[in-house]
Length: 158
Image (cartoon, rainbow, N blue to C red; front, side, top):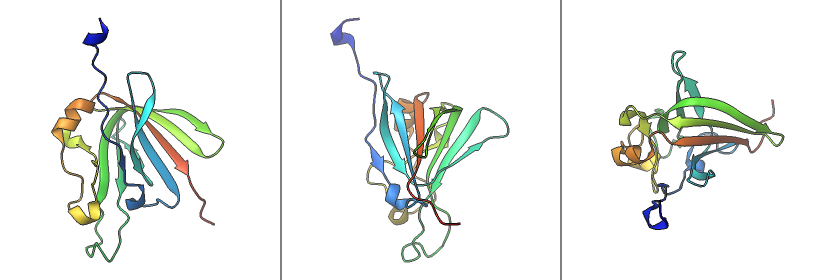
């Protein structure tokens, strides 16, 4: 392969909706994608996330909720800012400063399981209970490795 044959791996635009997500004053979660230089590059920044295993299978759903502002959202319904199906989720490490690292892979079966925010996304202003479907981005990212870092920003007194 010559240098002219090389096509760099696709990296989507960075999305920071940390301030719009629930628990952003306590937790900062960053989803990073593995690039072609074996480095994880930040992709999506959120507040608190939920990572649930599906019925004992090696499939997981990562989700996060919008920080409901009663002045904007009168329905008080749960609005998810992300719902992403992952496979092969494993513990990577935990740092002494309160950061946990997990790694996984974006599941490649169904684009309906890939509901991620894109630049400019605001769940409270755009309506809906999930980000819109994005089959083009799904096709570019399915099967990609993802690193999930969950960092504590502050502790609530008990």
